[in-house]
Length: 489
Image 1: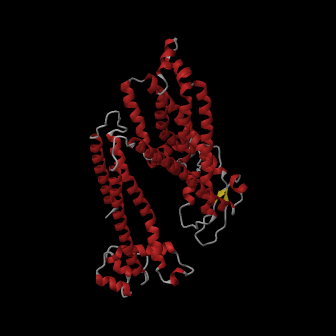
Image 2 (image 1 turned 135 degrees about the vertical axis):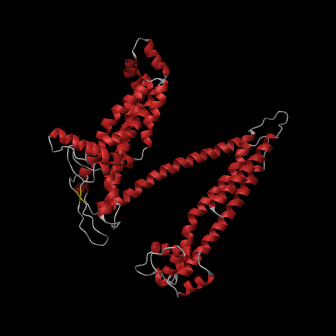
Image 3 (image 1 turned 120 degrees about the vertical axis):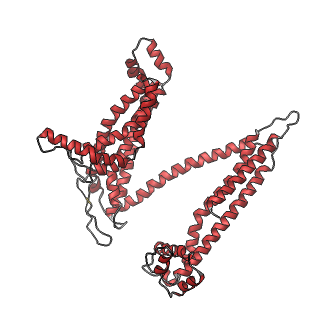
């Protein structure tokens, strides 16, 4: 029984519990002097929650813990010489066992006995069944795979039975005790409060986990590379080395990457903010309803285009156009390369226009209409009202929108790869190529590298640096928002 089938059964039990509880609660008749504490819908919702919520939590916990338990049990049954071998790799061997387990399900009894006896080549046998193996395997892996399949099937069966029984028990509990004074509404609201608290806690713990996962790897990196070389270095030359080759450490200067990140984001913001903000002002104040209903959806279409498409547009159209235009202006030698800061910034700015315009438009239209009408009533023009009343009142929200836009620009990768290249240059010429922190994070985490080498661990140092930059931007934005909110409220 699959997990989806079990969930459907649990939801069906919950729906039946809701219907029965609702009907029973609707039939209650308070005596003289009594008052119905909760409506029938709350009684039904409580029965539904008691039937569904504990069962789903049980199923989720079982699915999370069961694979680890099964793998440990199978691993402990492997030959002792395999477990204690110096070159033994648990994850690799268990991956092989699970692959063999997929093939074992397709074997006949005779073929299975031959596989257990080791009289056939497992790779050839399973290839005929449509299962590819990385190696021929060992004879002890077949019994281990059979045991793995049996334990997995038992786990699925028991988890399904336990989940359904728990759902039935929860439904019975929710249906018992339905009375005039039952505090079903309080119980439902309390459960919802716990759910909201759990969601908030998960969000906080996820953030903490992300930071800690980067922090520990960053500490390992700085044990090999001094802080001064990373934060004040002006040369990026990691000197990639294949796994086990013992390559040299290289140079990990952050400044070229940080300069490229901020430079490209600045060019993008200089292009996107004026256009997006003016578009928002036009749609909020000057455009008719018909024009607004057409212009705003068209602008928001840009937000749905994948960034790789923008990158291809930059590589195939914008970059060559700027290069040829600069060559014509300079008399033959272009002063803007096809892959340059200007190319990436312009295309990224096009991508960011809908973020600025849509968010700013929503913020401007959220300003109380009384402020707008009062300003016009005192004799101000529409432009004066926008400049001196609406925009100052909407400034905290606009700052937040620009912060979100800047964060998107700093974190962009695909456009930079195709439009600005991967060269870690340090220059102030926007016509030359530069790269960003996010591009180098991708480069450092791809390829055949040792995960403990400085060439790979530097990606975590770059990641936590980027996190610190965005955190500082958030703190500054909160300061601006609070300052002007107090002024205009």
